[in-house]
Length: 258
Image (tube, rainbow, N blue to C red; front, side, top):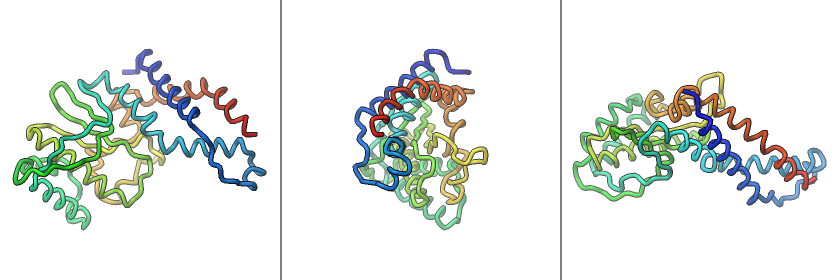
């Protein structure tokens, strides 16, 4: 179902407010770059610096609030930056390490369904350890209590982070199962867009850590999951309209660096 007019307006407002807030607080790098300035102009270098700065905060300042706005029409509970349950059983910790070790040595391919069931079997066995886990970027809950915990990542994460991300997903699952062993839970890495399009997203499969069918949502698949069918195309149009509306403000702001 396409986005409603109200949803489109809300998303465009979120985008514009985020960019305006960023411009208000932004100050370009003070490093002297005489050759770049002469070749490209200070205004273009200032704009380039702004884009680089924006890229580092795009997830939190734009993608995250947009995701929350979209999901509210499809999920009973929608929250951002929520803390997971603060306890994991000792046996679950051992099971997580066993899963990671087998994946790292390619002894087993990733299989999230079987991994979740392995954690469910031991989620309250042994000592319950208090843990400080990474906050969940997007917490979604259906009327049935089924959970979807999403972690928003940059489109090209460092290769060395694959194991860390996998451990985080398993720890979230173990923690929420410790709270309620009957919980149906999905822990997912979310990538806002596919930089390799039209080819498939391939970065994760190189490491063999993620079950790409059950632990990964990329681009169109992510946004349609959050907002419903055809959301992705509507969302791109929202960004375009917001960009057109902001262009005079952006041009005026960076003209002062000429």
